[in-house]
Amino acid sequence: MKVAAVFGAGGGIGHAVVGRLAQSGYYARIHAGSRRPCAGFGSTVTPFTVDLTDEDSIADAATAIDAPPELVLVTTGMLHDAARNISPEKTMRGLNAASMARAFAINATGPALIAKHMLPSLPRDRRAVFAVLSARVGSIGDNRLGGWHAYRASKAALDMLVVNFAIEMRRTHPEAIVVALHPGTVGTALSAPFQGGVPAGKLFSPTTAADHLLRVIETLTPANSGTLIAWNGERLPW
Ligand SMILES: NC(=O)c1ccc[n+]([C@@H]2O[C@H](COP(=O)([O-])OP(=O)(O)OC[C@H]3O[C@@H](n4cnc5c(N)ncnc54)[C@H](OP(=O)(O)O)[C@@H]3O)[C@@H](O)[C@H]2O)c1
Image 1: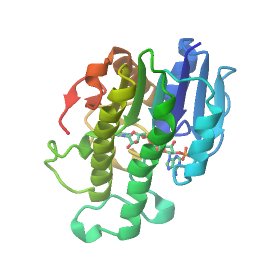
Image 2 (image 1 turned 180 degrees about the vertical axis):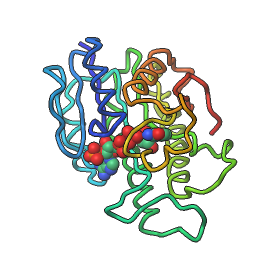
Image 3 (image 1 turned 90 degrees about the vertical axis):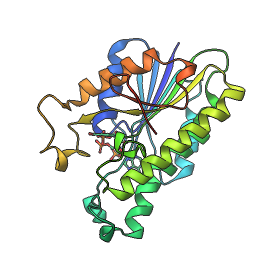
Image 4 (image 1 turned 120 degrees about the vertical axis):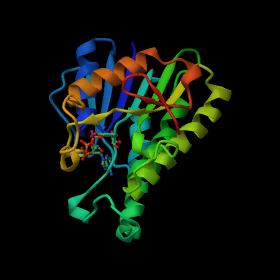
């Protein structure tokens, strides 16, 4: 009776991940969270609603997931938001406090609150994975181009939280794995305005990205906890 939970099931990658998990037949129950309930996955998928900016909705979701999950995958994230006039800054002149606060709320604080409410419920006696989608551009060591200040900084903050949570979990849940994953460049709404320069063969479909991510997740061991890993299994610098 394995249980999985995906936060961000309405997004491009999250939706594909839930589809793949349901097809795999490996999980008896898959909890699929999004701001609007998503339907059509079949009887093993239980949709729930969650908003990362509303901690009560995260706490309620965690309470409703009534069996210890072997997999929690956070596929939420924000790079641009036309409704809020947010787009990634090219230079420091583009910085705006409200846009930055929103990027941190969605990309760092929200996943941290999911961790707060979900990590304690991971099984203690067996392997379990808590994975969040970060981004290679959040790597401080790998930053050669600059720009995209709020997105990069909020993903770097997320990465730091992943390291912290991995350390904390090691004490109580030695078989748990807490990781950040980079999915590659994926053809979703998030990357849509920026796909022009992506070389042929480097823009993955959401389904291909889901397959990559689930393959990497399968191979993880507790030794990988507190790291950033790319879609192809490569360990990336923080
Ligand atoms: N696509 C890429 O090329 C790429 C590259 C590197 C990293 N990533 C990372 O991969 C993750 C998934 O990206 P994607 O490409 O699948 O993007 P996407 O299609 O835009 O999906 C983003 C998801 O975030 C959710 N979300 C945003 N604000 C939320 C909030 N306040 N409360 C709850 N959910 C919220 C959206 O929920 P709704 O469905 O309710 O809108 C959606 O499920 C992100 O963390 C992104 O940074 C993507």
